[in-house]
Length: 135
Figure 1 (cartoon, one colour):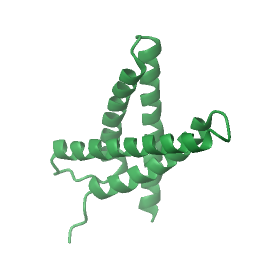
Figure 2 (cartoon, one colour; figure 1 turned 120 degrees about the horizontal axis):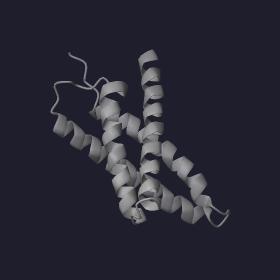
Figure 3 (tube, helix red, strand yellow; figure 1 turned 135 degrees about the vertical axis):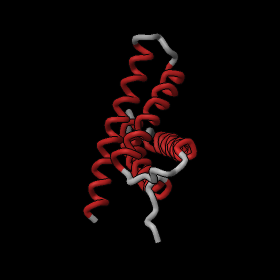
């Protein structure tokens, strides 16, 4: 149980760091480099996923060191894209429902969506990235 709690704390710290990397790069690309918002968001998301992968396999999870790194990274990216899809779905549905009751509904919905995707990411990465115990 202690190992799980330690992993959750590390996962949260890595998640916060990667959020700030993603957000910071996106804002810098738009505001300083003049990129279009969606292109900047795609670039920043990509950098964030790579950093998140490196930190997840080295710090958070007991990753299989003998695993094919390209295949492991591909699985990580696919899981991340599914998480992004879940986020977008929750955002779309939540905003369309909540905006009739309040202004800036996206801010509240984003908090909920982030929580759901964080749980999804932790569970799927633990299943697919962490080394399985020897039998």
